[in-house]
Length: 365
Image (cartoon, rainbow, N blue to C red; front, side, top):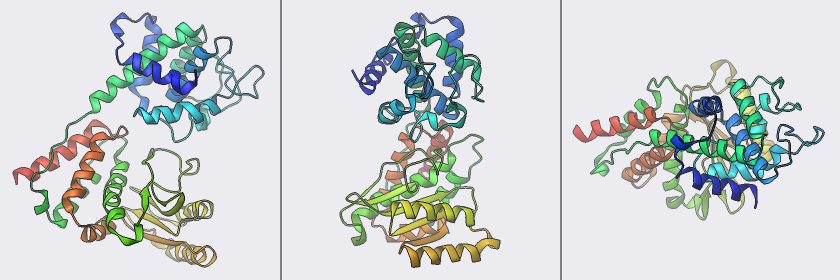
């Protein structure tokens, strides 16, 4: 059985798991709960624990603390994660990294995951004690992993919010929709995840645009990835990608609370040279750094002349407003956006409740 097949099997078991009957020792339960309660900030740790547990179940004789092939007696946890674990976590809607938990600096050091591990891992005691526990054997690894998967699923269920659907949404104006989006994007949430909201708004628009605009004939949208992944380590060209066949046509990079400066544009230049889109959008809610406009324009001109790609730098709201004027149905946009917000597993409950509140207010007005 492959690692992804085993993980799917354990995931299905976790949906029927009764935690009240767990055989996990109390201290291990506490460590698992600590990881689960902070999983959005510990996706790397969670992914590594899943990988190590599945590998221990499939290969009982392997000391899973030796997580790199270059460690004597070790194996490549990163390869297994990249090829099997992270894609499966994405598939089932669980927290996951863009590529691998081992791309987290604190977890990629070439030292065994024993109690002397030097990496500055978040919640290090919990992580290393869980690793020590699952190293005891496949039965221990399976019990711990099913407990963790069950707990993660419980947390995801808590985040589920049924968002109100607008009736007669076709009567909405662009100004009303923009006001709603600004309130949704800029609310003080006091938690992470809100930076993904503009990404979902643009994705909602392009779900319509690729069907209506001649430029995008036969085009498809790339899958929405994690908005918390490191730009340099992610395999994607931007937050949103548009393909014609296997060729990247356009990429959109969205900066929620980040000024567009020379550094941001140079990173875009690197991605253009790697992925070869014909257009690259860099959009920010707070604009462009005035003191670097000349340097930014020079990079844009150089890319246009040397590569042919057109870099478009603009504001998030102005660009959304422009596209809303062009699409055939504002109702479809609101429906798409509501669906994406409701189903997104990276957003917190408060982000979904805020949209629900804004839509409910529109219905009553």
